[in-house]
Length: 169
Image (cartoon, rainbow, N blue to C red; front, side, top):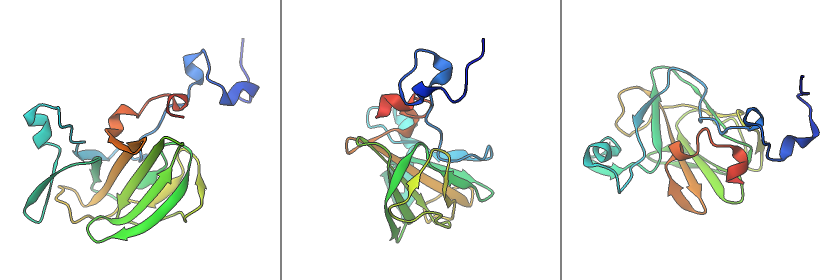
């Protein structure tokens, strides 16, 4: 028994797990590592200390996940969406805001080249930017700071990776 890749129930939630589409990470390179985790106010002190960002003699809770690599890497859309905003931030460089669903928005902070324009529609896995250097303290030169908002509230990006995209709509 084989199943067509082009079945008509593509957009409907499926009973079979192999048909679910999982949210991807915001990069494809296997050389990318986590520099700073998401800061959880209810976490243990040791984990909280690993989620602090140091900038100009000040420690700040990390509002996303800060990724790093020795080499430049592609920053990709974690799921389909529309580019809502692109701006420059003095500390965080290029800032790309993607509206993924009516509930979910993702924000990419990077100093690298931006590959999209406001109003563009992106599909999961599309390259939207290149990593870049940051003024935040990291061990490796190429970085991406990634944030996720659900209903306007910051959430730990790790809680949505590998989720079925139908759960997030």
